[in-house]
Structures are given as structure tokens and as C-alpha cells.
Length: 210
Image (cartoon, one colour):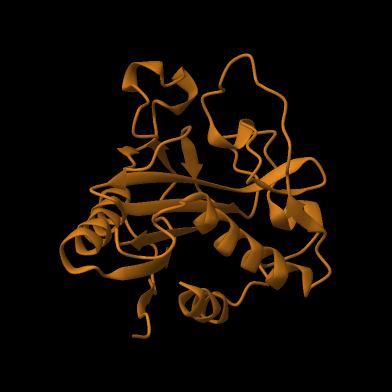
């Protein structure tokens, strides 16, 4: 039987709590209804999201003025500002659920392929040395699945497994935020005015693969 993945492209930026509740509903649908879903969205205002296992008391003072939400997925905190975010949920019966790292590869490889069409030299980071400590922000951490332009991380993803179903979050950093200096985005590094990614086209390609 052919697989079916629901593609959701939010037309307008959303509040952080709304974004997180919609992602939680996707995971629940994967558990209850074996539904596969892929959602792309943006954020209404600069918002800090904590990884599921991060404690609020470790938030540095410079982020205290920002709205804060907790993600279902793990990893480091993300300052959601100039970026495109995706969430993917698959059921326990999905063929990718048994090897969740394959979900990273499927999504990241497709993003690489699309961006390379525009001459952007983006690649998977590959091997990383062990970090002595984990920085607070996700984009200061190194993971083999990261997508980088030069040495700069522009896309990172994290997962959460529940009852065999998997929710994966990822953020494509487009521009440096004044709230997180020193983290240039794709447009800064490629010297572009706007993101070349056609989100609907990318989403349709990915939903066919999922």
C-alpha cells in the first residue's frame, strides 16, 4: 500500500506556543492514527525554544526578555528568528522508524540537493570531535548530521521518540539574529537577499520520500 504523508505549509508566522502545540498534535496523530506529517513554519516573534531535557534555570540572562517555549525534541536551545522551521512525524510502523538517523539523511540530503541547484556550497558536517561541554544554543553545537556552509552550521535537527513514533524538528538558519550574534545564516554566507528555497516544492519532494 502506498504511503501518504500530509504536507502542511503554514501561510503565516505563528506564536511559539501554537507552533509547539501543532507539532505535539502531529506526534499524537502518528501514535494514534499512523499518520505521517511534514510541516513547515515560521515564528511570529523572536522566540527561544529549549530542548526537551534543558532546564529553564540555565537560560543565559541575554535571553530573559524573549518568549520561551519547550520543544518535544531534544538538543540545545534555538533562537527562532530569521529561519525556516520544519517538523516531521512518523508512526512506529513507518519503515524509517526503526532507524531514526535515516530520517536525518532523507530530509537533509534533499535540502542539500535543492540548495546546490542555486550554487550554494552546502554539505553534511560529517565527523566531529567530542565537545568537552555542550553549548546552550544548538547552533553552537556540532553534530555529524548538521548542514554547514564553510564551517558554519545553517541547519540542525533533533528528535523525540514516543511509543515508537518519531518527531523530528529542524531549523534552517537564514540570517544572523541580533539576539544571537556570531551565528550567520544561509543568506549571510551565500550573500543572497532572500531564501532561494521554494518551500512548497521542497515539501512536495520530501513528502513523496516519506
